[in-house]
Length: 365
Image 1 (cartoon, one colour):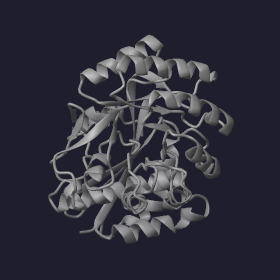
Image 2 (cartoon, rainbow, N blue to C red; image 1 turned 30 degrees about the vertical axis):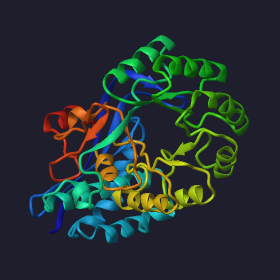
Image 3 (cartoon, rainbow, N blue to C red; image 1 turned 90 degrees about the vertical axis):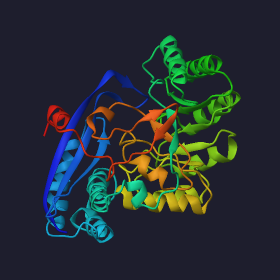
C-alpha cells in the first residue's frame, strides 16, 4: 500500500448555545485535519480539535512540511513516519502546540488506514481490553457562563440520562462564587454522584492551596488544571498538600512532559489527549508510562471521544472517558453513550470518517 494524496481541511461546527470556561469562549468547535488517500482505495481521516482559532497554522504545517514526507510511503510504517515528522523541518521551531497537533491529525489518519485495511475497529486492531462498554462522565452541563439555576438543571438532567459522574467549570474572578456553585451542585446531585471541577489554569498556587482545601469537603473526584500547565513544581506541591487528586493533560503535549509530571508525583489522573500529543503513536506511549506508575488514564476529548473510545477500550489503566456531544452528528459512526456508558464502535477504522454532507456544510477551508 502507498499513500498517493494528502488533503487538508478545516471544519467549524457550531456549538449551541455558545459556552465559556475560565480561559475560552467558543461558538464553534474546530475539526482540523487531513484525509490521506492510498492506492488501495482506503482513505484515512485524522483531525485535531480547536476552539476554531489557529486552524490555518495547523493545516499549513501539514501541507508544507508533513504531506511531502508522506507521498509514496507505506502507511503501515507509521512509527517511522512519526519520527520523520517529529525530527523533520519543523523540529527547529516547534515541538509542541501547532506542530504537534498537526502531527496528531496525520498520525490518527494513518492508524485509521491500518485499522480499515485490517477490517477491524481500531480498538480491536490495538489488541482490545474492554469488550463491551466504557464508563462515561459528562462535561456538557457545567459551563462557566451558565447561571447557577441552569447549572443545577443541566446537571440533574444529565443524571436522568444515566450518567453517574459529571464535571463543572470553576475559575471565576472571585473564588467564593466557585465555592457557592460547587456547593449548590453537590447538594442537588447528592453524595453518590462523581463530581469533578475544572479550573482551566486560572489559579495561582496561593489560590489553589486555599480554595482547594475549602472545596475538599464536597468529596471531589478530582481537581483539574488548577495551575499553569508548565508549572510542574507547584502541581507537585498541590498533589502533596490536597486530599483532592490532581488531574491534567489537556495542555501537555509530549511524552517527556508527562514523564516529568508523573515522575515527580504532580498528577494523579492522566488526561492525555490524542489530539494534543502527536496522535495515537504517542498517546499509547504516555498511557503505558502511566501504567508503569499505576496511574489511571482519563483522556481529555479534543476529538470529542471519537478516537479516544478506541484507545480507552484498548488500554487496561484507562478507566473513564469524558463525553461532550458537540460534533458527534458529523461522523459516519458517532460516539454513542447509553445509560452512562460508551457503546464500542464496530466499523473498521478509528471512527473518524465524516458524513459528506456535513463535511461540506461545515468546511471553511
